[in-house]
Amino acid sequence: MPATRVFGRRTFLGSAVMTLAVIGVHTPEFAFEKDLDNVRRAMQHMNIGFPIALDNHYVLWRAFDNHHWPALYLLDAGGRVRYRHFGEGEYERSEKAMQRLLGASGATGDDRGIVSVMATGFELAADWPSLKSPEIYLGHDRSEGFASPGGASLAKRRAYKVPARLDLNRWALDGEWTMESQPTILGSAPGRIVCQFHARDVHLVMGPLHRDGRVRFRVSVDGQPPGPARGVDVDDRGAGTVIEQRLYQLVRQPGLIVDRTFEIEFLDGGVEAFAFTFG
Image (cartoon, rainbow, N blue to C red):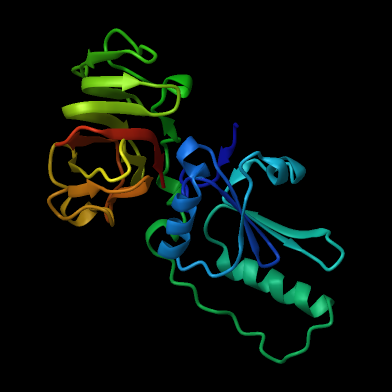
C-alpha cells in the first residue's frame, strides 16, 4: 500500500506504528512483517512494554486514513484525535501535547517538565537539509531507478551487472539474483547491490532467506570502508552479518553530505533484500 516515508526510513520492522493512547498498532508492508515472532523480537529489541495490535489486514490503517510510517496519534477520552505527528523527532512537542490533553481530561499534578530525549540510532530524525534520496524498493513490483543492463526480470534467476556509471538515486545488481515481487534474492555468493545516494544515513531492509541463516556482508562508501561513517550494524571495516529480517543501519555520515556511491557485497548466499531507506 502506498505511503509517505516521512523521514525516508522505518523504525519498527518497516511498518506503521500508530500510538493510540497506550496501544501501538503494527501495520506491515512486507510479508515477513506479518510474522508474530518477528514482531515479538522487534518489541524486545526496542524495549516496548505496551501492547501492540497487529493490523495485518490494514483495518485500523484505513480507519485512520493513515499514509505515514511511523505515525503518532493522541486521542481524548471521547475517542477524538487531538494531535498527530508523522515521522521520528519532535519528541518535546509531542510530550507537551500529551500534557495538554491530560490536563484537559482533569489529570492533576504539578510536574510539567519535559523529559529529555537523546535520540540515537534509528530514532534520530533525518537530516532534512541534506536528504535528496527517496526510499528505493528492490523488488520487481516497485523497482524504480534500476540501472543494470537488460532491465529486471520477474521471478527469473539471472546474472546482472553494474553499469560503468550510476546517476543519483539509481541502483544496480551484480551477480546471480532472482527479483521477486517484493524482495530481490541472492541464491549464491558473491553478489552486490550498488546505489548512488545523497543522504546522511543508509538503511537496508533485508533478512536471511532461511530462518536460521546467517549471511555475511561488507559495505563501502565511494569504494572505501565506512570508518567513522559506519552505521550501527557494521564495524569500521564495513563488515556485518544478516541474522534476522529487519532494517539494518549501514551508513551514518558525520561530515559533509554529497553524492556518494554505496556498495554492499554479500559473502554468502541466501539473502532477501527489500528496500533502501535514507535519512
